[in-house]
Length: 316
Image (cartoon, rainbow, N blue to C red; front, side):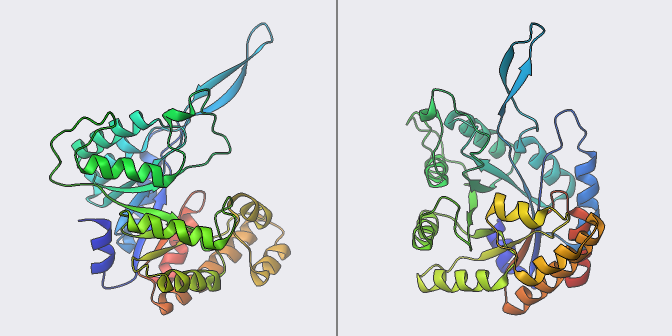
């Protein structure tokens, strides 16, 4: 069943979460442990993040420095298939622009379809550590460009414009949105414009960047609704787990920390104290969102799976 149908047919606020593939050379066992714990809350789907290759500097025996392209985590294709086959839960791999060529994306789509994974989340991906070398034309620049490739694939049109037999089950997908504006958007009006473009061209739902101030989400949803966007807008939730996230999260994700939360975090002497504050804030945040009538809550579990469990235990 497609993610959009799982969301719409859920009798309660849909629960879903996002996971990272294990580090290169590590077992998938830790991934399974997290899923085994969070299965208690009947997740409608599980997202699998995708990480592009990065250039790292290695020191040679003669002292010279060589730049090496390496990928620190396996791709999301195999992990998504393993999760879906093991648990019978819809897996949603992230398909990103940066670090993956258009051709690599096409092969990923072929593999995913063969494996029976038909739901995707389309994202641009992090550009901060990405170096496309001398061939930027091999890569998509924006998620909307990637969206066009997926749509053409669903129509049976390959990257080289050749045609193939259209699959019985086309890919369905969601895309990202930003209640506090994407860091590169010149203004919120621009962000709203691109959200509309994503939906107009096939995005069946939108998932927000993490936020900690529900009023930002409410205002964003109202603006989208006023613009005629009717698809589900799923709030992305991440409990604070470290003291330094008071400054790191606004810097990295452009997510504003409301003063009541910031004030409590400033009082924390340890990460354990910060984790407790983060769980309590997320519980209040989720309860308010559920009362508001959100279609689902999507949790970012990176370094926070235990906190997500504690939050979900209280709100589901």
